[in-house]
Image (cartoon, rainbow, N blue to C red; front, side, top):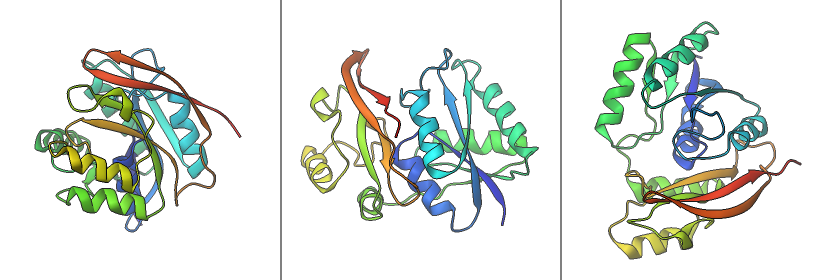
Length: 218
């Protein structure tokens, strides 16, 4: 079986992509890009310690690399080259339909001679989010685009009521593919134990709401 890394945000899409990918590839590594100060994830603003706790709970090794947006591609490539030296030949990505993201991934992977895998690509949104829930994964909303969803959505668990309420809005992608919301997965079938956490303040930065989430160890 080929060895892969999963591009890791800590949210539901990267988790579901990993869950589907392990049917066909071995995924011992998670690759997570951090903000320049190394404190939080570049994509979702999640505390870096929380992401390490996720990896520990799944028995996986997480590679975390701080980077500016300007230096993102170079840092990402350096990290993947390090994984290639460990026998990795495949990258798993949680993209669903944003072609420009896929184009970037395919170009970078081509440069590195890594095979990109997109387990969620082109799937229906309702199908994906319901698969995530029915599989037994648990996640909460940690960030929203203030133009779409207010701070009252922060901390909500991704479940049937959540999906129903999102559908009621009519103009929000059910999987948040356009950045309407981001999530943190704390339990599910790939976890040996749930990730303990506590919630803090809700903060508005630019046009995004963020929920402070801190790791609370077992």
